[in-house]
Each structure stands twice: as structure tokens, then as C-alpha cells.
Length: 391
Image (cartoon, rainbow, N blue to C red; front, top):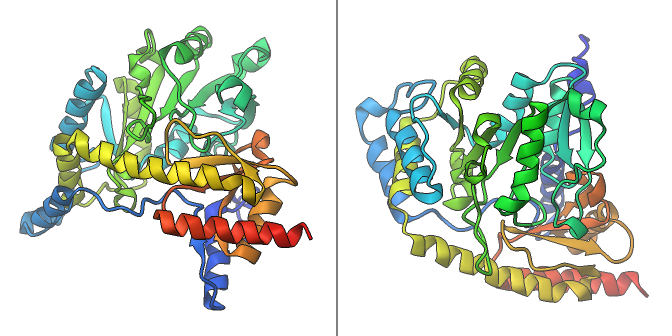
């Protein structure tokens, strides 16, 4: 049999694919699984977004290819949104490129800017695709210490001059997955200055900027002084508008970055179905702030309930300031063992913290994607499982 390439043989399975397979097996045996692992919103998009999709799909001229750069209307809507939300002007023709969700660009920018021997700087607690993208590209991952003590900001203070010279990209993500940490302009500024000094591409993965609590506000990297020349931002409609399955987002940055991404992306896919773009325009242009605030209030109630119930299940967490997750420390044992046992014995599926990097080993991540009665049931199951374990 022909041998697969090293880049695949050495690539571990994506954790949520593995968890999904385990859940399917348990469900086939009759188990009722409460899924709190993946960040897949359980609430629908605004009604007008669904209506826009249906209306566009009925147009017989909307079923061909929509173009490698998406539709001008969608790019213009992203530009309008950034101008209104972040007071940032972007050229929709040269500085915005639609994405099949922001996740694909995590891999594409690694392929576009990393060679073998280069270094990707990745927070030691962060979205796993940052490190996987670097490995697919044949580069080396260097984890930047990131912990609760520093507000889950990456620590650059001990990075050697040699590593800084070899680094080509650095990933940031706030509101943060998995921790829910928030960052402001002052937090970003030293990172921007570091990337300017060392000519490093700063990649801001920003799908949660409008999911915040307790009067916190998400920001754009382009609000940080001097960031524009060395930064690209990835935005997504998946979480902001409950459109995860629609796979619609965009990359924003200076024209050379977008041109490089388009050169790679156009050799791989052919863009979206036109009605998805039209629905995205509706979401960006016409979703009322009150709709977002009402949705966030639902997540906030779920967050508060979950955090209050965790201690009885052998876990501890601080209420996150944003995103749609709760990052919980395992009080006895480690995250991998806890998540494995929770699924097998309590039929509650959560994500092991080690998935998110070496400083996540003692944690698990819960997604706020279940109604409150289901969260209560999940934590009751985990509490009973813990009581049995401690006998």
C-alpha cells in the first residue's frame, strides 16, 4: 500500500472528530449524551437572515459559482461592519477576502507564511488549529506561556533573540477560546510592538468579539496603534450570529496579505453558495444590537449556572468575560482523565484541556450550548459520578 505523507502520519486526529466518534458509539448503545464539547450554537440566527437565504436561493441566477473572492456585496458589508463596529476602514476589493469560516484561514496562513525550520509562536493555551497549521506547514511550534496569572496573555519576556529571529507568525485570540479571557488595547500594544520589531505576522483570530459579558467589550487588532502593517484579522459569523454550520467569515488585512491568501485559497476551493453571502450581508447590516445583547444574556445565565455547580463536580472556574466557554480546573487528577470519565460514566461530553496546549493539562472546557435545564442535568450527573469515585 502506498505510504501517506509524513505531514499526515505525524498529525494527530482532530480532538472533536475523536469525541464525536465516541459519542456516536455510546449513543448507538442507547446512552443519552449531553454534548458540551464543541462550540456549536444551539440557538438559531435572526429570522431575517434565514429569510434572506431563502429569498436568494429562489433566484435561478444564484446557483452558479459566486467567484473566488466572494461577492462584492458581501465584502462591502464586512467593510461597513468594521467601519461601524471598530472605526476601521478597509478596502473591500483588496483588503477583505471571504472565508469558509475562519478556521480554514488558520491553516492557510500557516501554509502561506511558514517554511520548514520557521517558528510559529502559539499561546500555551489556545485553539489547537494554530499549532496544527504550523505542523502541516512543516514548521516548528514554540509555545508562549499563557496562564490565569497573566490573564491568559502570551508571555514574550523570556523569548530568546534567536527564536524571535526565526519566528514568522504569532497567534492571538480574544475573547479567548478556551478561557474566555478578554484583552484591551493596552494588552495588545506590546505584542504589536514586538511583531513590528521582529517582522512577524500577527494573526488575530477574532470570532468572539461580540460575545462578551459583564460590560466587557471585544476589540479589533486594527484598533491598536501601529498594528495595521503587520496584522491580519480573521472574523466569523459562526458565533456572533449563530451561523456555525453556514461556514462564513472573512480575512481582513493589507492587500499583500489578502493577495497571498487568495492565491492559495483559489487553488483549493471555489467559494460559497451565493445565498450564503446574501444571508451574511443581512446579518452584518441589519442585526439589531438588542438581538446580540439578548443572545449574550442567555449565555451569561448559562455561564453563571454552570460556574455555580462546578465545585460539587470536582471542578473550579472563574466566570469568563467573553466567548461561549467555561474553562474549569480539575481539582483532583488531570483534564484528560476527567473528560474521558465524564463521557464514559456520566455521558457528559466535554473537551480535555490538554487539547488546547501544554498549560491546559489540568483543565477541561465546557461549551455554553445547552439550555439551563440540560446544564443542570449534566452537572447533576457529574456530581453523582464524583460521589461514586470518592467512595
